[in-house]
Length: 353
Image (cartoon, rainbow, N blue to C red; front, top):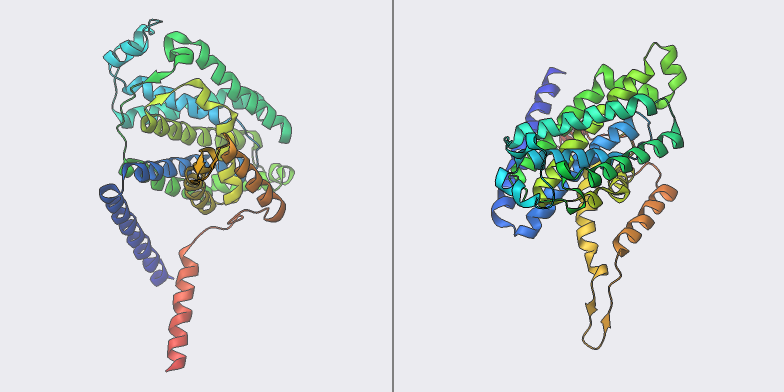
């Protein structure tokens, strides 16, 4: 057992070193477009894991993720932009005075973005998390849209429909993938803790969980807040990557994209969210070709705007109909399987000799 534990630590350390090497090579040798896709992949991994905690591990049905992302995005934008950039953005409406001259480091801004998203999740969760199933989905969807409408109309804070431009791009592959790996480890520890066991008990059978003495409402709110915290961080990272945000970005369509990652990867699987987060982001970029005109020389086939989402909707339907558990189901990658395979391979070599 102790030997296996040492092997696991060595394998984990080796994997982290390999990941660092891959990030280094990608950062130095890939073109800007490929690096951007890798950055987006890391962000969507974080977002997928955060929604999976709520929908997959706790069994809630939340559709308000885009609202929490918007809170994180606007918070980090307003806290990292220089006073002169804010002045250029707020040329129609004067910015709220306390925000005019404030400028904080990125890491502190990310923490504040996550905490603010979690606080709003608490305010939303207190009245809505007593609902179940479709009723909860409709309520969270409504609150997500309310947040977007508020951001559209609070012109002195968010600049309204004009959005914010010139957000400092302080992020890179190291930041995004470093945070993604950190979120994976944090979420793994949460799921394996007593909190995670309570979340899964609520998902499996609320009545039985309550009979066991679990405070269902408390753990639902806690799960909702943790998921919202990481959604806020993911939204913040998205804002500093694309450097321009507006309320239209955070429509339900964005929640649907994150939901696809969760469903295709597997409800209740961190590994599934990581795999599908990368896979879907890469495919979304690759499928841009169907929205652009295709010149065959003798004829031009016109592109179809929005066709990417149509293709992904069909894929989601196919997964639900034929492969309901997704790529991983509720399974997780673990080193025990690798160690077992290594031991079997050694035994086969000995037997062959």
